[in-house]
Every structure is written in structure tokens, then in C-alpha cells.
Length: 201
Ligand SMILES: [Zn+2]
Picture 1 (cartoon, rainbow, N blue to C red):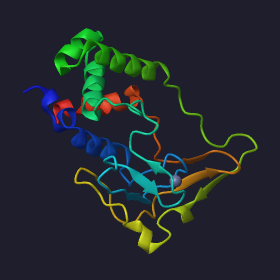
Picture 2 (cartoon, rainbow, N blue to C red):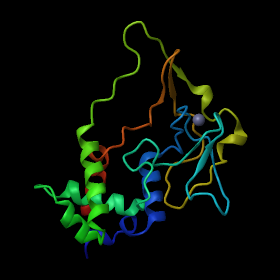
Picture 3 (cartoon, rainbow, N blue to C red):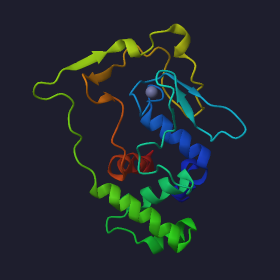
């Protein structure tokens, strides 16, 4: 059976759960302030599935914020499948072929392939925090500081991770960027191998 029948390639909800489990092993990571594991899953008839609100900075976010899949109307499962196909073929698969395999219009397939390719080009090693004359603070008080906040986020079935978040440290650069250890640079290059690894599993 083709790997494209895997749930994360055929179902947008399963795709989101898969991505959440991959990118948020210690709970949702707020892309705005870097706090880990302190978000409330928004529930409502008109609420997009997977929308979280950060309990620290109150900003909303989903798992695709900051990834190559951000702000797209194309279902996430099709994005994952296209990423898989592009990263799987050694010679590089054409947009036409990917569109054919995933039953996408040539226009949609072209858009997906273009963005995936762009994300490969943009991959630069992330600039490390700190450096000369900069102070990096490891601030554990952000994480799991209130018992009541710890379990607010209701995990979806596909998500991994445990209870307390004591072991997770948010790194805060004084008067500068805030970044948590778990915010990955999510591009086709970083995600591709993860999608590939499933072939043998
Ligand atoms: Zn936040």
C-alpha cells in the first residue's frame, strides 16, 4: 500500500495532530512569546480546529504558525504529502507529477512545490541566542509555575508528552528575542526527514 494512504497524508485533522506531536513534544509552544505548554485549546463552532491561546501573552496560534504551511487554504495533509513526495524523490519530482499523485490542480500543485522549494532555499542555521555582550537567561518560572495552568491544554489523541513541564526551559535574551528551546525552524528540510523516516516504521 502506498505510503500516501497514511492518516496524516489523507486527513487534515490527523495531519495537524501529527505535526503537533512532532513539533510540540512538551506541549504547545507559543510562537509569540516562547512559552511552552501553557496554552488553552480554543473550542467553538466557528473556531478553527487546533487554534490555541497562550495563557501568558494571550495571543492565538496554531501549530503551523512559523512553518512553511502557514496561512494556506490547502489542507495540511496535502502539504505533508507534497513535502514527503518532494523529499522522497532523489531526482526531484515535478509539480505536475505531484499534482497527479495527490489529485491537485496544476495551479495548487505548482503553489505547493514552489513554497516547499523556497523553504529549502531559506534554510540557514539559526543564529544562536546570546553572543558577545548579551545575557541569556534561562527562565523556568514561565513554565508550569501555576499548578492550575499545567493541564489546561487538552491534548488531542495524536499528541505525546507528559504532565509537568518543569524540565523545559524557556530561554530569554535580555532586551531581545525570546525563544524557547523547542521552537524549531520548520522547513521542508527539517520536516522532510521526519516524514521520510516513517517509510520504514
Ligand atoms: Zn505567548
